Image (cartoon, rainbow, N blue to C red; front, side, top):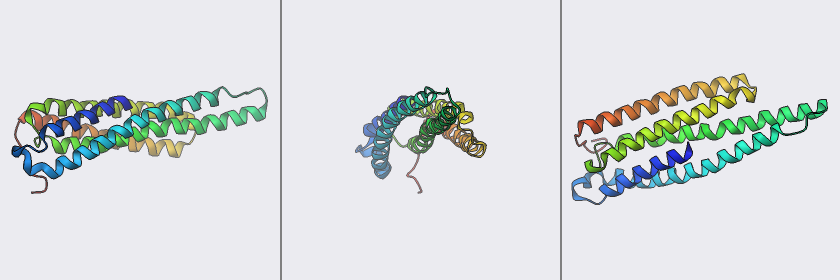
Length: 188
C-alpha cells in the first residue's frame, strides 16, 4: 500500500510542477509551493513506511517462531506476538493517516492546476483512497492479535472516520475535475 501511496504523491507533485510558474496559475503560487513540498515529503514518508511495514511483518513472524515448549516460553512468545502485532498494526495505521493528510491537499489542488493534467490528479486521489483502504485492512487483520480490546476499538473508530473522510475528499476531487471549472484562490 505504501508504494501505491508514494506513486500518488509523485503524481500530485508532477501535476503541481506542470502548473507552477505559469502565468495562468500565478494566483495559486502559494498553494503550489506548499503542494510540491508536502507531496515530496509524503512520497519519502510512504517509501519509508514500506520499509517499516516489512520490518514490522518480519518482527511478527519472528515472534510467532519463538519456542513454545514450556509454559514460560509460551508466555514469552504470546507477549512478543502481541507486541509485534501492535507494531504490525501501527505501520499501516500511519499509512492511513498519511493518505488522509495528502488526499486533502490533492482535493485542494483540483481546479487549481493545469487542466491537461487533471486526470493525473484524479488518479492520485483514487490511488490514495485505495492505499488507505488496503492499509486499513492490514490494520484490522492485526488487531485481534494485539489482544487489547480498548486499543482495537479506538483504532477501528479512527479507521472508520479517516476512511470516510478519504472517500469524501476523493469524491469531491473527482466531481471538481469532472466539472472542469477553474477554482479561485483558497480562502478568497
